[in-house]
Length: 61
Image (cartoon, rainbow, N blue to C red; front, side, top):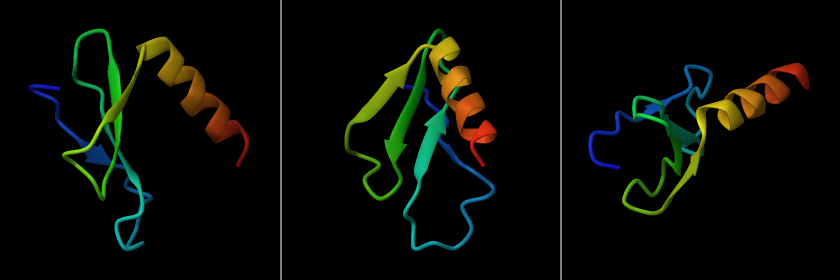
């Protein structure tokens, strides 16, 4: 994950750090990790799979 720029959602608010961080600046991959464990493992997705997940999450609000 060298070069990953991690970010949290602006909707995270002040929830004691219980959220995920996303790095979408890497070529061909979107990485997701637990914000409480930044040195821990990250899940990786193709950009298309990540767009699909985000689209479904937004639609289910």
